[in-house]
Amino acid sequence: MIDFHSHILPAIDDGSKSEAESLLMLNALKNQGVTKVVATPHFYANNESVTHFTHRRQKAYDKLKDSLSEDLPEIVLGAEVRYYEGISRLEGLRELCIEDTEMLLLEMPASRWSEFMLRDLVDLTSKSRMTLVLAHIERYMSLQAGGVFEDLLSSGVLMQINAGFINDFFTRRKALNLLKSEKVHFIGTDCHDTVKRPPNMDRALEIISKKLGKDFLDYFINYGNEYFCENSDSILISKG
Ligand SMILES: [Fe+2]
Image (cartoon, rainbow, N blue to C red; front, side, top):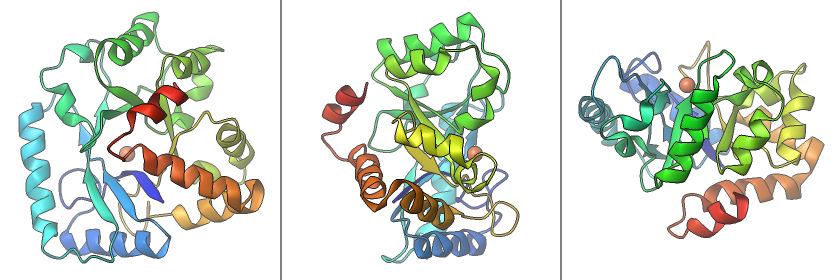
C-alpha cells in the first residue's frame, strides 16, 4: 500500500522533528502494511523558491538515508504544494512533482473556489504534462458548488483523501462511497508525528476490506501502485 501524503522527513516543516521520530513513523507505517510512502513537505511559494525547497528537502532526506533499512517503506520525494492564483506560472513547478511521476499534490484553500481557480486547475492539467492530485479533498468538498468535483475528475484531476476520513465513524460512509465510485485515487495518512497525527493506515485498510471487500482493497492497492510504474500513461488515460 502506498501512503500518498506524509510529513515524514525530519525538521523540514511542521511534521517529524528529528530523524528518530521519522524512523518511528516509518516503522509504524511498515507495521500497517505501507510499502511506499510519499514524503510531501509543505511548499509555500511566498516563502521560498522551488530550488531552495528542493535543496532543503534533499538535505532532510540525506540525514535520514543512512538509517533506512530495506524492510522500511521506500520514501519517494514529493511536496504538498499550496495553491495560489497564478501558480501555473511558477518557475520550476514541475520539479515539485512526485519523484519519477508527473503528479503534483496540490493543497487547495478551504473556501469556495472561484471560476478563475477552477480554470487554472483545468489549464494546469491540460496544458502541462502534469497530473494534479488534490490533497485531502474531504476538507473542501462540501464547500464547492455541485458538480465541481465531477468536472475536475473528467478533466483528469485526481483526488486524495486522508485515512482519517475513512477511520472517523461520522464520515466513513461518505469516504467509502467515494472510493467505491472511483472518485478517489489515493489515500494518505498525512502523518506529522507519532502522537497527535500519527500514521493511521491500518485502520483504514481494515475498514475498506471489511466494508468493500478484500478484492476491492487489492484492486485499489494495485491501482495506486500502477501510477508509480514506468508505463503509467495508460492508466492515467483510462482513468481520465
Ligand atoms: Fe499534509
